[in-house]
Length: 300
View 1 (cartoon, rainbow, N blue to C red):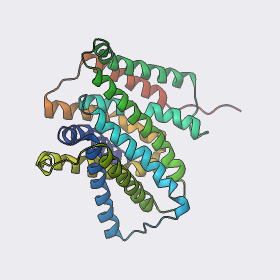
View 2 (view 1 turned 120 degrees about the horizontal axis):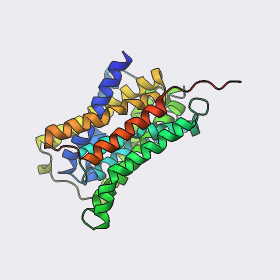
View 3 (view 1 turned 135 degrees about the horizontal axis):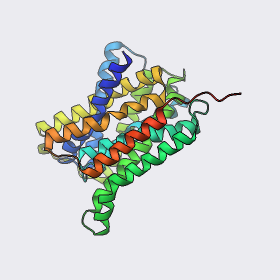
View 4 (view 1 turned 180 degrees about the vertical axis):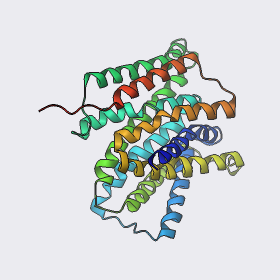
């Protein structure tokens, strides 16, 4: 059952970048992010209303869903929307594939006892960083020539996405899964409510309100896909896997996210991955194998 959940999660995450690309082609990035979060919020309102879940949260505990919402929803979704304007969905999927690397680093620091550094894992992190540099090298060269500097900025936005996801994955276990301060349903609802309110304020202040004509059938379906399936449903799958596997192993689902993103990019736009993208992705996969391989217990 866990592997079926993992496959569904990879499909949800991998298609998010194509949906986001469709959204930001018609909507400003922050407004596009807001509508994505709003779609997820509406999904949870309906789901929890049908299930009659308790969504009350003590005021003193609101920091928990707000912190996770910032790291898993608000910040990474905004980074995806901003960066996806300048690079292909494949690039977003590859950067999402580095989340286990950053999750390992965050887990080793914050969840002491569950992950620890070894020479092999340190080498794995190094190999992963080399893979990222290979992917970014053509964009760095283009930026130096003033040919395409925004593509490089898009990559940095996806780095922020990966860092935010990794820290959020670790903290989800630390302050949500392992906490009895509130129900998981209440935690999730307040994450989305907080993120939606903050994004609405930012959107009004930073960008013009999009015209009704911008909401074509393609955009609406992409918002539903990104907001419901790639966000809300994916979040439920992620929490379920964290309970079963832990934060670091759950993050290994992103092994398959770049493959799904590449496939969706090829189907929708006919874009083939470049040699640098494939080479960097192979190094990232090798890095993940080195990091995820079980470490033998230390002898006492």
